[in-house]
Length: 294
Ligand code: PLP
Image 1 (cartoon, rainbow, N blue to C red):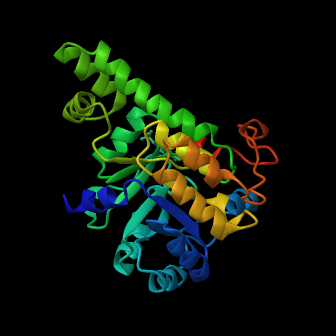
Image 2 (cartoon, rainbow, N blue to C red):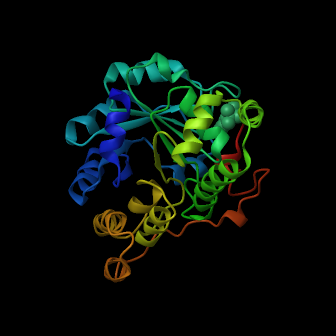
Image 3 (spheres, rainbow, N blue to C red):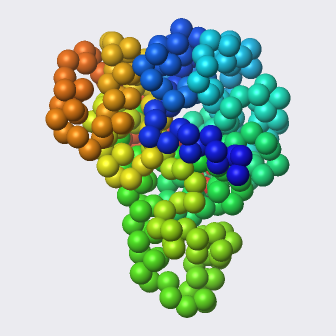
């Protein structure tokens, strides 16, 4: 109960990646509902080719002291000790993130063992429900972080919605439900609740490749309940203006007149790299982060 509380409050908002207290203050002033404290944003991690770990807790603490909005921080997939450390630091939320190098290629963190709430990425319904079953209080699309290409985030939210619709129509008998739950590796009750409510039982945000106000509004119109913006904002020529614009667009996502106003004159946006330029086996732009592991 307590764990889902904060996610409900974040609903409709924008969570921004920041690497310094100064950036965190810009994000807070622009109306971000939370910040994600990081040493390097995904666009730079992608280029580095190094092992990416939890950020220095001291740096996270400086950001926590600089702002009054909730502060999130990332741990490696399966790295429950990094999570213990961040819980001790009293961050508001932990992102168990594929953007960092996984610490365990088979198991995610048993998130029920923690008091601090977790957000996890998902590309489809099964992945979302497995993370929720492990205790995630919030789900986000994986998207393709660090690219400025929104298409993977679109793919993931569309897939989750389509699967919910399809299973709602096709699963009829107890044995249909049981077979699907086994296939997805989730408890049958969790699957049933999700299908009867027609949506995930936790707050569902968009993430990965969001770079413009229109991108944020697109994902909101597709049914996301808020947006994470990573590399987009502080890779643009006028972060302050773009940050405000993305917050506005997330609020007024279904108002084209407002979106027109918000989208104009934003300066140079993140250059980005298209999904097609990323070789799945890992080319000069690296492998797809969303397809690492499983
Ligand atoms: N995503 C990443 C990046 C992983 O490394 C793993 C590892 O096992 C998974 C997802 C696994 O997820 P699932 O439980 O959906 O198979």
